Image 1 (cartoon, rainbow over the protein chains, first blue to last red):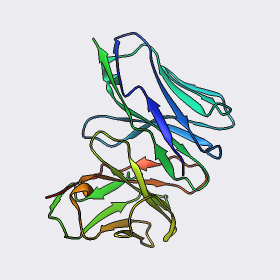
Image 2: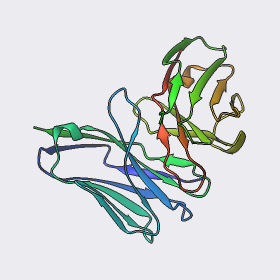
Image 3: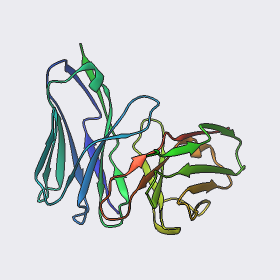
Image 4: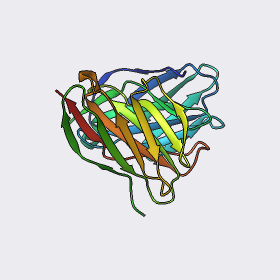
Length: 111
Length: 113
């Protein structure tokens, strides 16, 4: 099955700086890559996703890039704010819509 | 539009007991996936139901079983509970199978003593 690795496991940035989280996947058949934000005690919330026919997608301060050849994708958050502090999970999915998640990145934005 | 709901919110069981967790999918969604999230870990795929049929299963033993009803709500059953089954159990619904976004419920926190 699919194996998704995520780095770093923890990340601290100053408010206003950028944060980058990276994931790699093993199954070349994976073609959908969502990112979820999970605040303490809450459900994972989708923040952005990308499909394999696209190399980059942006939504305001959040962007995701995908390199299918290297089998890695990254989340970029610019102008970070304290409310961005949370655990972020990447996931990969192929036909059948079964998601395989990374182990999470705990992001702390220091005011 | 109603979001994904789960019940109960919290549950405490003892080793060897059985438990049933419930999930109501978002309106218009016919696919439900179940995940186990241990503390500090990412969600692990248990299985998925599409139109009342199991559509894929992760690396979980047969004592984890499920069901989907005609209204697309779903149940997760776990028999012979073990201490390691303590986790947050999340269900997620999606409109179908074709690369559709999954929307998560709030989860059920299961503690096995």
